[in-house]
Length: 222
Image (cartoon, rainbow, N blue to C red; front, side):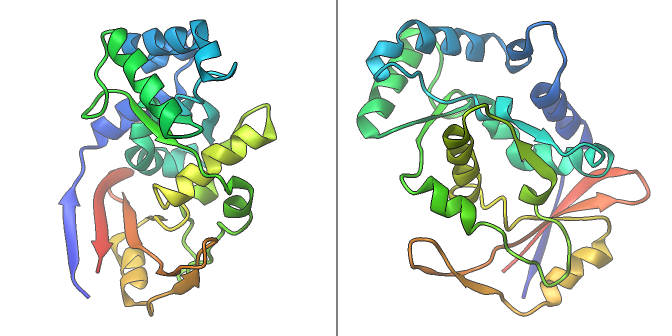
C-alpha cells in the first residue's frame, strides 16, 4: 500500500466547527446569509416541492456526541464541512426545481455554493447496515456524531447520505500517526453493501496531532 499525507490547517477545521455548532440567537445564522436566503426561499415556496421544502442544510441536524468534542471536533468538521451548504430532495425533478430556485435567489449552485442532492430511496436499510467494525478499533466519523431530527424518517435520510455519499462510516479518526498505520497494515476489509455490491472498505484516517492537540494531517491509503 502507498500512503499519501496532506497537511491540514487546524484553523480551517475550527472555523468549520464554529459554523456547524455555533450558538447564535438565530441557530441558522451560523450557516451564513446565502444559506439563510435559500432556506427562506424554499420555505416560502414549499408547495413546489409537494408541501415539504428540501431537507437541510444537513449540518443543522448533526452534532458531535457529548463528551467527545475535544477529541474529535476538528476531524469531524473537516470531513463534514460541506454539509453546511447541502440539501436533500426526493428526485431529479425536485433537484432541478431547487437548483433553479437557488439561482433565482442570487446564490451559486455547486462549486462552493449550494449543493442539492437526492436522498436514498432505501434509507432505512442503509442505516441498519451502516456500522462497520474497524480491525484497529478506531472510531469512524459516524461513531462520534449524533443525527438530531424530530422526524425519524428525515433523520434516516441524513444518515443514509453520510453513509452512501461521504462514507462517514468508513473514515477513521486516530490520535497518532502510529495508530493510523494500524489501518494501513490491516488486511483489506470487504463487505456487501445494501444494494448487493461487494465493496472494499475505504482506508482513510484523520489524524489527531498529540503534540498540538488538534487534527493536522490526513492519511489515506490505497
